[in-house]
Length: 131
Image 1 (cartoon, rainbow, N blue to C red):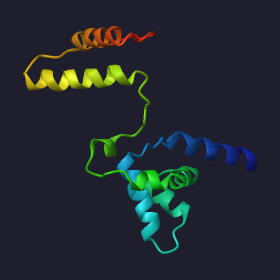
Image 2: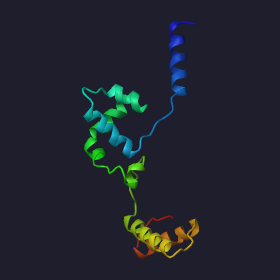
Image 3: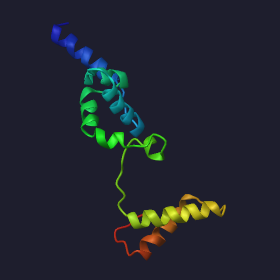
Image 4: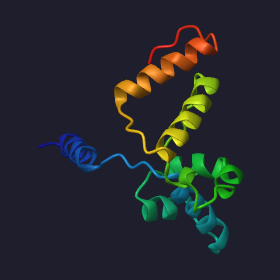
């Protein structure tokens, strides 16, 4: 085998065993704290510590003010991604309805949620809503 073939094989093996890592908001916050509290930290060192790539560390540190403001005890800290809400009025109404339904010990299933979401979308005159 030529040197180029060996190098390609090693690269392929490494890429196949490397699994994609997604950090929670709390982990990103901790990474930023580690960066601040470590004397002369390197992004490569943090990347190794968190099992992520260096460019991911760089992206997180660019938004470190955002991550440092995350409350580690909140539900938000366990999230991995931020998905914007397309219909905030429907989301808020549905959330309030669910809270009240759970307090009243009502049974909630997927079909009921879907119907309630459609109902609220209709009430708020939201177009292009599909539950």
